[in-house]
Amino acid sequence: MDTVEVSTVVYIPPAEAHDFLVDFPGYARYSEYLDRVDQHGDGGPDTEYDLHFSWWKLTYTARSRVVDVEPPTRLDWTVIKDLDARGRWLVEDVTESEAPPERDHASRVRLQIQFFPDSADEDAVDLPRFVSLDWVVEKVKPLVQSEAEQVVRRIVTDLEGESRDVDLEIHATPSSV
Image (cartoon, rainbow, N blue to C red; front, side, top):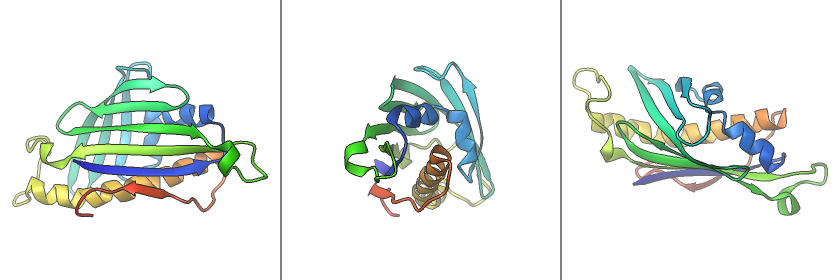
């Protein structure tokens, strides 16, 4: 199992951060490789999302399902086709310890992703001739880490309404990165 975990502090209340994070279709604005997201449900538990990715010569649609929502602190999801993967957004109020004097609120936002690269279904992606799924997996693993970092940075800009240097804490990375 590989794990990606990235967190940072945003200067808004936890409820605002959580409301923003449950908007899965909006994620396409933050990712270089996510073209669009189609929602099937109301956004609560059992809502499914088709995430349409493209990278290099490949396109792929992942299907995820929200498995638990605990406003304003948690949103859990799992991938339900072609790959054993799951993740969560966690939001923690850290106003007293991490809000600068000019800010009224601070929340730590944490993205956790766990995935089993060897669980990828070889028939799920139409690979070019002479390209193996193992090669693709090894190329994609570092992209997962860098993409998670970029997504969190871009989300902070939208949440706070302005760009700033964002301190990211990388808690875990995929093996072989």
